[in-house]
Length: 314
Image 1 (cartoon, rainbow, N blue to C red):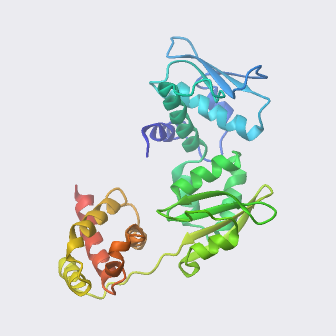
Image 2 (image 1 turned 180 degrees about the vertical axis):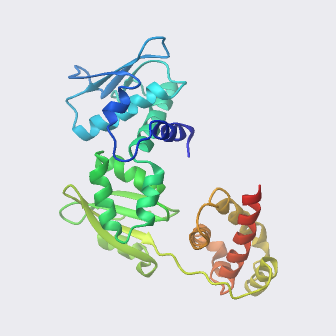
Image 3 (image 1 turned 120 degrees about the vertical axis):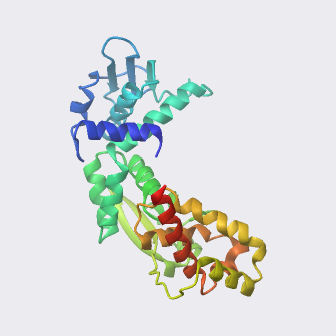
């Protein structure tokens, strides 16, 4: 999680806010607020950052309500993020291109707003306990009050497993793609049939939903059930796999991939973590024979359990 996302998380905790909450009331604790029509092409402006007085946020009320809401959270980010100072006009068209400091502040304020309006923990909890992903997408979107674009970007980004999502027009043509996962729905895909042909649908849950009147089709990687059946240590299991696949030259690669997937993911239950690790090996053609070996899941189980114990003690 980015540092500015952690700041947004602390703001919610400090103010004892749960989703959904009154954003304007929160903003007014930190700054003055005014809505008005702007004569220039920008969404919001914050005045007095880093000064002794109380900052003031101005919001362009000619924008759609969903965009105003995200802009308001964005401007609050400028107020709260300690290193943002001066006067910031947000989303101006082209006038700041190439200004690294400004672009960095805008990116940080966007990340802050996204975490404030759609907390990662909320998304994880909603989908972790979901029995119907399609319903969860629509219900969470309706509660959020943000734009479809902002909602999908954040939700797909933090989804608990690999996911691909395509936006479809009335003719069934793909107009946008959202994805989490290496090589997921990559390449030129023109319609829903291209997308279905691109992936092995047996390995994915497919579902569809609507946000407002826009249709989406999604594929979520199915989790498999891991069962320990081999009592040997992971080194012995891996040695047999490498012997039988002539893969000893890939030993370093195999052992390097797995720890990076486990570290920071110790909060996942074992089955989710096993699946997360296994997916990290998918798409690596040089390792295909090794990953497809019947004992590779046993290697994952033994190695993950050992590393999880090690990282939890650290």
